[in-house]
Image 1 (cartoon, rainbow, N blue to C red):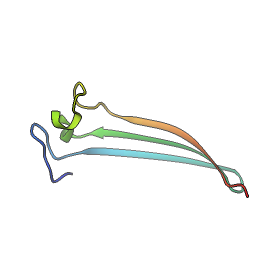
Image 2 (tube, rainbow, N blue to C red):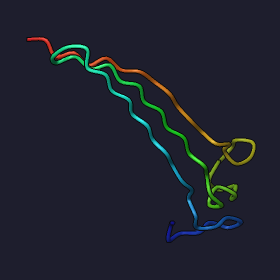
Image 3 (tube, helix red, strand yellow):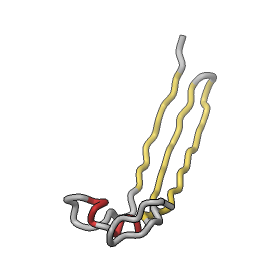
Length: 72
């Protein structure tokens, strides 16, 4: 929830969900899978919030993998 409500928009910014799966095949090595999803609220109904884009943003998401390896 946002204290600021733009014209033609509300003050609910939305909801976000995140997921992280981690596998450790050996000491100091991690394989990770990350995912994130957002459901924009009525805050983004205002044209002020999306600038020159055509309409409010759809439900944005991302998925990516990482390899962390600490080697001395």
